[in-house]
Amino acid sequence: MRAKKLFALVLAFFAVFAVATAGTSARQANCTADVVSEADVVRAAENTPPTNDWMLYTRAGTPATAAQFVTGPASPPAGAGSLRLTTATGSEKVFLFNYDHIGKDLGDVTEIKYSTYRTSGSGSQVAALNVQVDFNGPDVAGGFTTLVFEPVYNTSQGVVTNNTWQTWDAFAGRWWSTQPINGQCAGAVTACFRTWSQIVANNPDAVIIGGFGINQGSGNAGLVTFVDRLVIGFSTAACPFVYDFELDTDGDGVGDSADNCPATPNPDQADLDGDGAGDACDSDDDGDGIDDTLDNCPAVSNADQADSDGDGIGNACDSDNDNDGVDDAVDNCPATPNSDQADLDGDGMGDACDSDDDNDGVNDAVDNCPTTPNANQADFDGDGIGDACDSPSGPPTTKDQCKNGGWMNWSPRFKNQGDCIQYFNTGK
Image 1 (tube, rainbow, N blue to C red):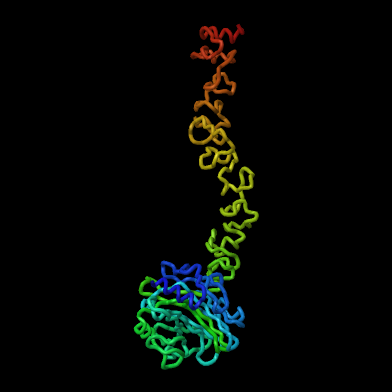
Image 2: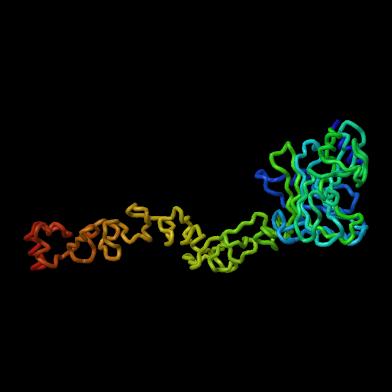
């Protein structure tokens, strides 16, 4: 029944209700403010159905410039921006409404505040706060009204002053109603003012039925108001809903004041080198002094631009520096091509880049048996090839090569030492 009543009331006062994304701007879990910018709102003419959770309405004849998200003025209470509302003539009207809270009980409201900064206007006029409600609740027909809080009627909280930010506590202030409701007459007259507590007490079934937000116009000629930090809190929620109005030039959901690429959309705010300029607008993402367009590793710092295999991908970000088809992570010679991964001595260093293939402690460049271990480098026949990998051939070149069993090392073999010496002496 409750849902049917809400829907019927919306039909009655909006003709068609189509809030496509209601609830999508719920505050963050850590109670920080929700940033609201131009990209979050849908602009429409007054008295047209809402199609978004944030609607920026203007009355016929009111220019679009009547509502603009801007930086400043001065130091806004939330972030660095605000919503500027300008009504040049008495017939102009502009208002920004949020539709996330439809169906919530007025009795659950615990906080309603907003801050204003006026640069021009008369008396104590400044942007007002509106809440559209069903004061009868969901089980009784009819009941639509708009509750209005205006600082001009709440001078106990201070007189509106130009060029300074002022915060208004609407929850503790006086409200007037556009329609007669229980315990309250209609109109902005002293006899019809009621506090929020009085309204709730007189209308215990009242619920929010439409928009909640800021309204300026209808007689406020020459009024320029900046609005920021719109707040509404509920006893049913851990955190109040705090809305921070910000200029967001690139429409990426990050206000210009906090955006590391204010003119380039980058909602993730990625900043690889941490230099304060987002990757989306940083010409040197890795901060190595080489422009990304020329950097062979644009996402990995490598000022030397080393590229062992000349494939155009710098060593710092190339998974196969020697381009031999074996990933560097498993390549036993990552800087020397060796697709066969040969490793004679099994020391984990491929032969192609191992200076001691046989692991005998003698560098290959001087090892007389580079692929056969022979730390003693013995070379019986003095031919430059170590005995470990050489089959001696004759004839012996000295008698000493026949002594001490040396005669047995020759091929073909001698019968004995004397036979070897005789061969040396006679060649027979």
